[in-house]
Image (cartoon, rainbow, N blue to C red; front, side):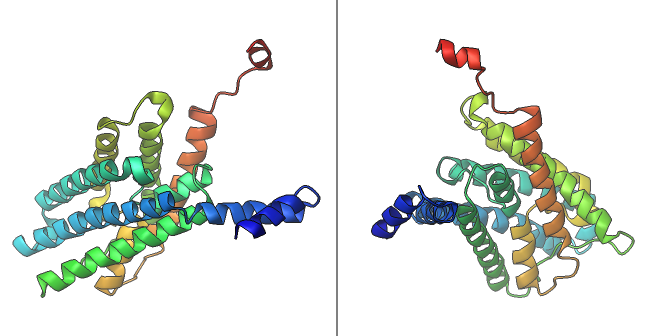
Length: 268
């Protein structure tokens, strides 16, 4: 593989085609390094913990309260579980993989150029598998309990639900960017808490309407194990668009990377 890479690098000086091939090969090699593999494992573990807690909290609410779907206390419990589990999941993986725990966050980071496309694809695979495994474990261990899936009320349109999910995911990903920005200082414990808090607040705001997913992996895992993909596109289209907008807005408008002026560079 190294010999092939060296050949491509030599040819890249002469033709744009071989230059792009060399760049692609370099990115693929970067996506299978030991550090990259550790980051995929970290994403798997953190996403598993998050999905297990959030989906499990809904199942517990429905077990204890038959009418949990219309009980306000169940919404509060689910929001708290979402906030706490996401804060923990981000904290334990932030220094390894960035603590994405969400394909929408990964997509936003890829749009912003913070991770390569091959790495983002492996992140997605890790997150989706972790979600499915967490939901399968809940289904097997609880025996008779049905794994809940995200859905929208009959009076609500798919477009409206997508917009709602997009706005919430925009807030989530924007917070992720702000919390993890090295220009604001070290991440510490406040960053994951801020991310968890905005996620919990969004669940309170949208629980009765879309379930407050903001996470395609959670929706996919519960839909696959629960056996219902009705309106499933809502939980991909909205979050991915919202995350892309948050990435572009934060990096290019609100808090762009400061490029030194020509005079400053000459003086340096």
